[in-house]
Each structure stands twice: as C-alpha cells, then as structure tokens.
Length: 324
Length: 303
Image (cartoon, rainbow over all chains, first blue to last red; front, side, top):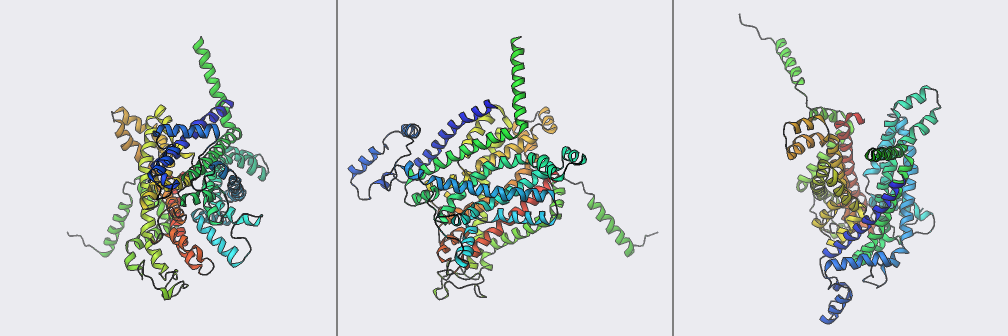
C-alpha cells in the first residue's frame, strides 16, 4: 500500500510538467505577437525589440520552455501580468482560497444531499420516493448551470430580495453560488449512489444479513452503503473537477473575487500570463485532490488492500523461486 | 375442386403471416430497439429530439420573424400572441431566435462529440488492443491531459485560439477527448478476451479485422450510450462558453450568447433570460432521457 502511495506521489511530477507543457504550448500557438500586449501599438521598433528581448522571446522555443519550468519549479514564478506587471502568483494566491472554499463547499453539500437520496431511492426502488428523486436528479443533470444561477438570481435576489446577488460576504451570499455549482453534482451523485446501491442490495451477503434477522438499518448502512460507497468515492474526484470549472462560471456570474473571475478578466485583456497561471494553479489543485481521493480509495476499499498484499506475496514467491 | 377463399380464411392467412413476421430471426439490435420502444421515458426523449431536429430543418418555416429583424417600437415586450416568447432589447422576436438556435446547438454538439470520439476512440482502441507498453504510454498521456478539468481546458484553449465556432469546437473536442478514449478503451477491453475474438485470431484475422469486425461491433453498446450523454454535455459546454464570451459571439442566435446578452435585463425584462435557457434544458433533458433508455435497452442487466 505504501508503495502504491509513493508511486502515486512520484507520478505528480510528470503530471505537473505535462500541465506546464500544455499551457506553454497554448501560449506559443496564440495568434498575434505577445509584444503587442506589453508595449503600445505605436511603440518604436527599438522599444519593441527591447521588450522582446526582456520577455525572452528571442530564445528558441525549447529554451523558453526550460526557463519557464525552471522558474515555476525553483521560484514558484508564473510570470508577470501584462496589465499591472505584478507577479501572477501573488495575484492568484490571495484569490485562491475563495475558489477552493467555493468548490469544496459545493461538493460537500452535493454529497450530503445526494447520498441519502440515492440510498432512499435504491431501498424503495420503484416507489414514489424513487420516482420523484430520479426525475429531479435527471432535471438537475440537464439544467445548464449558468442558467440555473440566473433563475436563482431572478427568484431570490430580484423578486424576493432574500439573498445577495453578488460578492461574497456572510453566509447568505454563499447559498446561490454553492447551489449553482452543486446542482448537477447532486443529480449525478444521486444517480451513481442509487445504481451502485441497487447492485449491492442484490448480493448474497445482504440476503444472508437479512435472513439472520439483522436490523434493517444495519443491513442498509453497514452491509449495503459501505460497499456501495466505492463507485461514489471514485466519482468524487471527477465531481471536484467539474466543480472547479463550475466555480469559474459562478465567480463570473456572482462577481466573486476568485481565481476564475481573475482568469476571465485576464482573457478579456489578453493578459496571457495571468490566464496561464490560473490554469496551472487550478490544475495542480485538482491533481492534488485526485491524489487524495485515490489514497482514500485504497484505504477505504479492503479489496484493493488485499490485492496489493497478494500481489506482493506473489512477487516474493517469484523472487524466491528465481533464487532457487 | 377449387378452394373457396372466404373472408375468414383471409383473416387466418393474415394472422399466420403476422405471426411468421414476429418469428423473424431476432438480432441483438432488434431486441434492443423493442426494449427501447417499451421504455416510455426514452420514447418521450426521442419524440422531443425528433421535434428539435425538425425545428432545426424547418426553422425558416416555423420562425415568424427573421433572426436579425429589429423593431425598436416593440423592444423588451413580454410574451404575447405576436411574440410568443417576447422580444429582446433590439425588438427581435425571441421565439424566432430560439428556433434558429436549434440550427447551432445541435450540429455543434454533434460535431464536437464526433471529433472527440474520432481521435479519442482511435487512441483508446489502440491502447486496449495492443495493451502493455502502448497502453501504458497512451493512458499516462491522457492522465496528464485529464489533470486539467475539462471546462478549464476548454477555457484555456478558447482563450489561446480566440473566439469563434471553429475554435470553440476545437476547444471542446480536445478537452473531452481523453474521457472518450477511456470509454472506448474500457469497451474494447471488455470484449478483447472473448472466445469469438480468439477464434477470429485463430483463423488468421489480422489486427485491423479483429478490431473493426469483431471487437468494435460488440463493444458498441456502452459507446453509443456515452455518445448520447456526450452530446448533451457538449451542448451544455457550448452554451456556457458562449455565455462567458468565449464561444459564439452575440448577433448569432446561440442560446448561451442570447442569455449573456440579456443578462443586464434581469430586473426589467426577465423573459429574455427564461426561454433560451429552457430550450437548452429541454434539449439536454431529451438527450439524457434517450441515453438512459438506450443504456437500459442495450444492457438489460443494468436495470
């Protein structure tokens, strides 16, 4: 198990290098001369050349990539913003907590709603609870997030004037963004929980547990849900990825000062280093979260643990066999 | 002695022929189709999709006004008999624009999924078929691509290439390609070791023949289901990107960009915001209903 975790940790290195490469390639294929974004349109040829030299654009592409990676790895340097010439890392880091909180809050809320609903509709399959839950889950999956946000704004901020329409001060202002990011996830996770629970409920050990007269709640939660949770956990990583994307949209709609809003503003002002930086930071966050999910998965699922053990055992046997 | 052909005998003949046609050798596809037809929700989804496709084809006939027909005296009016969904700030008929929007969202969603499956599918199939090192290298590269969440990847690509239909299609196709490769890989892996593939190999079928003639048709079930869901997701992404100003720009009646343009009228004329969004939702809902039905029909064990 420890081996697996170490391997998984080491794998982060090529992943981060890969992300840097993707982002760098995107910056290279951007049409237009990046110098235009730094100096004005009527700058002299000399000024343009000086800017080009300063930005290191005269180096061959691979040297530029090497310098970029070196800067990121050794100094955490993601470049300077074209617009206000501040280090991008600084700009992003004080916005980052909001985005992370927004994402994690919406995933947590989604799980808290989806799990009970999924279990209920599996246990009472084909009952009205199941029908209503699954119908609403389908609606939730199909609703466009940003439109849902607009409708929430229309109802709760404009008509009822109950919740603030923008910014992030106080609990009330979190409700709409979290609802918007979470809506699709609730639907999706409820559907996953239901189908995985249904599969588990039909297993022989559930029948055995019930036949021996075990209490229904124990059968459902201890024998059932525990085993049904695996596909749900596997889905959480994906859900977090979707939510990070959702957070970007939410920040734009509710004018929340997070990384997403920063990136979208940067796109409008053609400030590529800031966009690049935002994507690198969010991608690294996502990779770290995926790593944690994978580790949790191996710890929670005893089957994987035994698999690792037995694989090691086989390997040991092979080694011994080879020695003989 | 000539036999009299009475109406009763005709009826009998008809009955016989009908029962004979029912005994036609049934193929898996035919059985799936029968199961699909029995699923009421899936039928609802199919009917809505058919209506949407017909709307896209006959948009010129259905829409009472042109997409750019401006009428400032009628601006920002609520729904009425003249303007079913009301008018926007330029006095354009929202119903007509929503109708023309089907011509944008449906084809773009389809094209994005087609391209993502074309490239992702080839990668996934090769990875599954050759296994070993090839599989590992392909999957690791896809892992790296997937470490950027799809929506962010799409935003990054669109930000780099610029707005416009072609760039939007590239952005969405590339960002969803790894997930499609995984689906195809898993589907091929599930049939790779079956006896019929083994026997095909034994009688000397080449790699291409094994893959295209034996594995792919049998692995098609989960892929078809996923294609349906992917189109739904692609349509959602197209509209979100356009809403953010990274997709299809304003004068085009794309549903997301209509919502983006109408955003500032949320207090004065909320009807501008309601109908284009509802159109997206109905389209996506129909695709999801159809996809659910397809999944149950193609793999009845799952139900």
